[in-house]
Length: 379
Image (cartoon, rainbow, N blue to C red):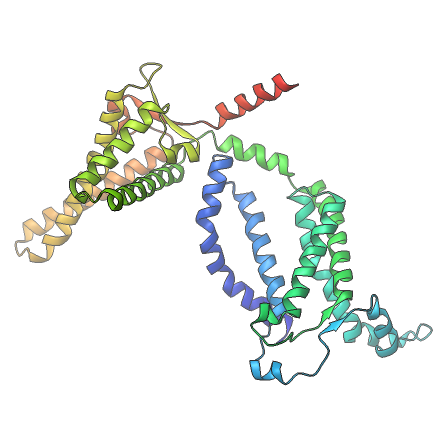
């Protein structure tokens, strides 16, 4: 299996890995910055793709257990710089014979060490450019990455195989570390042409001052998950009827927490947003109750119930007028949500916020000011 085939496998596998990490990544970004900046996401996901590709290049192709058991080749090469001796003795290189240079450059004795250097150049570049690693730290982590690869090979893919099917080579540690070192200087070059980490953070924080639809939806979803999880624990501890206590508990969660904790539920706290009053300094209990009722009954409950009802009865209707009436209701529900979506997208309040005289705001700016004041006091 050649290198291009392995890279192709990594590209095919990457969407599944990306799917698994997307929700944790989005939650982490909203928690830290209040936004998901596309440029940072591009860097992080490309870094994940690089690591996946590098790992596959180290372990693939996978042999059968029978092939590994039949191997008699050595599992370790512990002589430093042995690749130089191999190159001089086996590549056909003759220093005073120019025609041998091309042959030597095409030989495995040159290609394999060069590959081991190239393999970790991106790693060093990422570490220095985005993660702001120092020169020494970049070298250390490049060495540790290489050591991880070599241990993976030495242990036969963590003892899945009876022995290592590739060579643990001390030269690979040296060459991979050199690659990371070169990558450090590549990262320095990138800093001259691309936005640095501080600039990326500043843009993320600026974007985080706006409460996006995704951020709202994640907060609601996270709160429902937390409330349901807590209720399930209480249900098994006290063995009370699930209905209607679940609705009572969830209602109390969404009403009492914002009232006692400055307009925030646990989900809102994690994603750095809160509900505030637009008519007074303090958010009242009546405002929270009204907002919650309007949201879960008017914005979610009634349209969803109508949607389910219309979807269920439409197949049983024979009267054309009734069928068109039901389709009209479905269309109106769709338009209703489209209008709400676009109003939220342009930071306009919708009915449950207008009628309760509340709105949702980001707390990232408050946290920045608080951190600045604390640092100023320390200074």
